[in-house]
Length: 303
Image 1 (tube, rainbow, N blue to C red):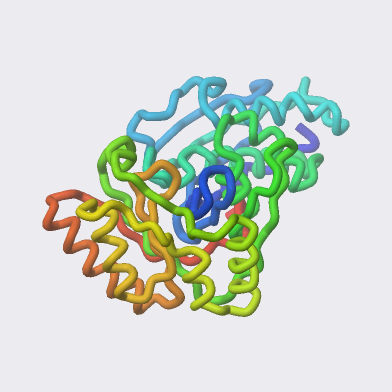
Image 2 (image 1 turned 60 degrees about the horizontal axis):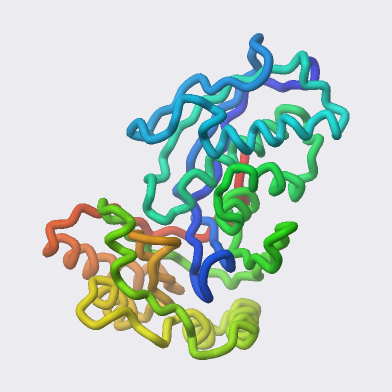
């Protein structure tokens, strides 16, 4: 236990993914919506999942059956390669789930990020930060969500194996208006969501990079806003029309839905759109959680 520190609480942010050009491409970390993992030294050897709260009993209490546990055990298996003897080490894990399940907000990726970051810190960082992505991928979570939750920012996955990514330079003043309705994801999938911009991916990415570097919000809208809207009469189309009328830069499902995310360049526009869209949800008698969130730049951190 000599290499271990005292117990720590780590938080890791939620993420939005599949923001454009299909799966496995982009994800962004959200400030203000995060899962927490508490890690304490334990007299019992190995890793134990001590307590889980906030998950509505959706997470297994068997550590090895969870995404977080699979990543943690992969990390544990790597430690001897970094000169860490695990035979005398033990930690207990406590999960505080605060990101809603099954809504396209990174799901368990934030727990994976918090757990790996915390274990690495407890052992005085035998792995470099970027090396944590390898055991993280053992969780089965999407690479783009793991990168966002571990490292923060807005990231572009440029290679899947081995995982490599590019962190985008961001202008100030970007906010996501997020709606997470309490419906099953497959209902969102019934709507056809066309995210292609009509440009090739390389052209669109070049436009996006330029827009970020020079705070060119008009170009940013052109790079992100879907040219092919959702189907007429769909609920997503209704939301898109409100977002567009209020000056939003993009609007689409996150991941496989049903969460809808809209990008704005100031909070007043986002607040006005939020009021109008919440009224639509109320008219449909559908419960929904809504946030206006900035982009998290840190990723997993110790609180």
